[in-house]
Image (cartoon, rainbow, N blue to C red; front, side):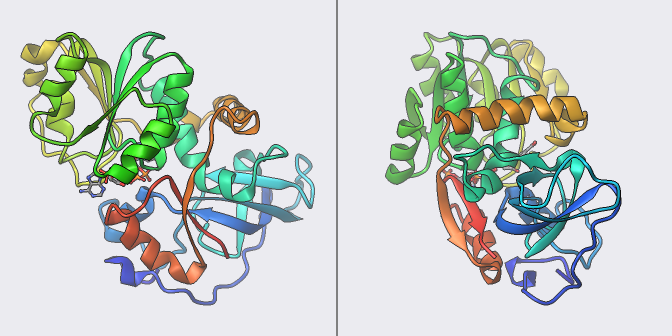
Length: 316
Ligand code: NDP
């Protein structure tokens, strides 16, 4: 990317091969995940100096070790997230971020879902901590985070109410285990009250943002928590905290993954649990879309245009 803007600023082109610095490994990328954060950086919602190679997660094979690296060896398959420059054939990845992929988990599954899977993990055990038997709302339940969050939540004994925009997405959300699947709308909170004996949900997970935040607030039970974790429809406007009092002494949190994986031990724990769930088949990754590196612009158009389901991957 040499400029900030719409999807057209994503153009494939030659770049010098990265050299692994001390503490880094060089990886040949087998699959690069396409995430909403890539669109925020591309559009300027999150300021980023250009030029840069976009992409924040992926998976592939270690092809060279930087000076002093002993933790990994050439030929191992690793996945990473929160590392810039992943829409590429080669990426230099810090060893602390390079997670060995278990046998039986494909590069595509790991490389397109690690960021979202770790997000789902910290949303359930970090940003909030709903207890087994409680009811939660997952907005955009057929999306990348949505399908993983639904699977992890139902596995933890939670009842999941979720929103989708089409019949096809409804089928995916149901297959992921959601208990009740709803369409968006101004009466969403009312419908959720009916489904929860008037109480509302213990936690509302909202990565849609502007379009859904008010309904998420209105659907949350007294002393419940609204976890606003994204802005797929745009950022939520400034908000008067006093409103949380009459709504039911609610808490609102606006977390970001980086703060829940900064500690290497925490990253290892979350990744171990997430990869374990992929390896034993209790969580499944639905790779909904595949493109070559020259399809990055189209991938962004599709993600922003609500035409994707599950995860989206670029295969160099
Ligand atoms: P998704 O695959 O979930 O795509 C977004 C979905 O949001 C769409 O498919 C669509 O589903 C729904 N949506 C509703 N309204 C709109 C709209 N106006 N424009 C676009 N989409 C809309 O994306 P991701 O899984 O990549 O990410 C989901 C959210 O999680 C994003 O907001 C992202 O920024 C956030 N995120 C946050 C992290 C954090 O740590 N804070 C980390 C990772 C992701 P439908 O058509 O069914 O409504």
